[in-house]
Structure formats: structure tokens, C-alpha cells
Image 1: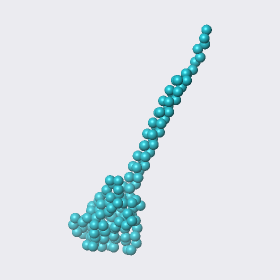
Image 2: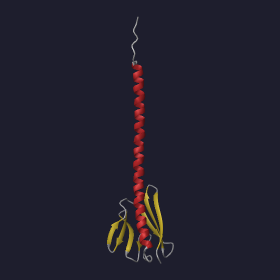
Image 3: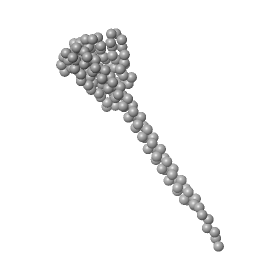
Image 4: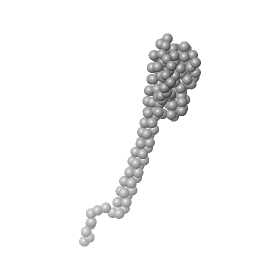
Length: 141
């Protein structure tokens, strides 16, 4: 009489090990792709927040200004209070009383101003990666 030993055969162990390996590798790839997507989304959100803060500052200065300096162009906004905005070194620069400060740490591709009338300014900031922000503000006058 033969005794039947309880346990798994070598084939069963190899199949189980292979299935666990495939599942682990697939899980790792899913987690890795999620981390890459999370990083891209986080960078886009940071760029958007930086651009929105700059737009809010520009709009606030325009709203509190009595008007718009007639020497303003599509790339430079000048206000009668002595405040001006431009794009310098791919960053938004604000000049007030001769002191310059940068409103963005993110590199922007382009900033443009348009003037539909004497007291309105439309500001457009292109942050790259199909991210463009636009704001309209009116001077007090």
C-alpha cells in the first residue's frame, strides 16, 4: 500500500509563482503610470495657480488705477501710478517706483495685453502645454 503525501506538485508551484509575478509586475506598471500622471497634473496646477495669482495682481492694479497710460503696448502695460508690467526672462515682471519684482516663478511662453477701449485691458498669459489664461479688468475712469 502506497502512502499519499499531501502537498503541491512542482508544476502547481511554478504556475502559482508565475501568476503572482505577472500580477505584481502589472500592479507595478499601473502604479508607476499613475505616479507619472500625478506629477504632470501637479505641475500643471502649480503653473495655473502661479498664472492666476499674477492675473489677479495685474487686474487689481488696473482696477485701482485711474486709467491706462497711452504708451502701453501689446507687450508692456503702463499705468499712470507708475506701475508697469512686462515679460522679462520668460517671467512676469512688475515694476513699481523703479523696483522690479517677478510675479511668477514658472516660465511663461508669452504675455499679451489688448485694449478694447480707453479703460479696459485684456491680459492673456500663455503658460505652455496648452494652458492659456485670460483676464479682463477695467480702470476706474
